[in-house]
Image 1 (spheres, rainbow, N blue to C red):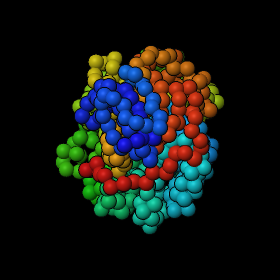
Image 2: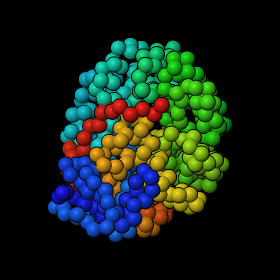
Image 3: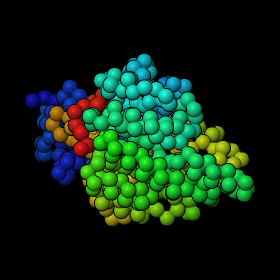
Image 4: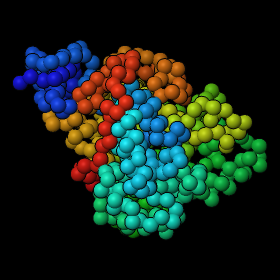
Length: 453
């Protein structure tokens, strides 16, 4: 049996490490796994003692929120440089959200033209839009839907009313498709922002207070209750406190399909410790809360977190240079830091960083978005989407990122690992320094048949 490529190293399989192992690839798939002597192959890459892991699936990115559909190019270049072989992109594109078969087909065409990594897609429903498009979008392969309880833009990021949210849940109830939400109560947030402005408080220290935990929990609880009423899958795309996971767990224990997601910046930053140095560079919504890091790591370890994502935002740094924190754009780049930041944070706390990373960044998002077992695992028959992780300390230099943004709140932070290679469909995409595959080598990934519940 001859392979097109064999990668030798320490393979991280679902049941543990395969030391001195090898992964045999043929026709873009994992065809064999073994140890010892490497079999005949057109090409062999010896990774030594480095870890061979499934390619990361980043379950929350915003590739097209600033530069439109061409933004897929720089976002997916950055993805493969970060060991991410599939991004799950949000629907709030500039200028038109993905809420119809026409916008879905346009985005699929853009993926075919621009993508270096694979891309799966969220869809959405706009205010006042009927649910008639939902079935066609599901047939077209969207992996989830996303709405917001807070309006940042009336066209690109609108608020969906409670009655329409219930209609959407009812339309999804007989499917495995999750409905995700940006979870902030609009009236509470706007009142608190107005109060902060009136008091002359306009720095990063005012950001969390101006979008208080009460606003996040109120929106979370209402959304989960609407999902429960429809017996649909309700998903919170970012929770910032352990209290949020308590609420999700309460609904889950009552038998409802409820899940909560965590973004890696909530596991690293604290406004009390980092706000003075970072300012608006750490502004995200919902805000990073003080004093939550250790508790949130506890939620990861306990299994209460569905998966961890980057919530990568494609905003240029100029968007952060504003006189007031309230005018600064919300969101941070994160594709090249998701994997090393999560791994390093887990390792620093004495956890099994290898298996926890593969579980949270590969296996769980694959299962959540219906991509398992084709993705998220080193198993025979799975797609040969692979990252090689080297135990080598690095100080992150955002100026060398491949996202054309070249800034990050992680700039200057030390990570314990680095991505040395990334393969997409068995083809080398990143060689440790440069992105070497072509635009269009990434593929559109439609939802498969696996289900979280």
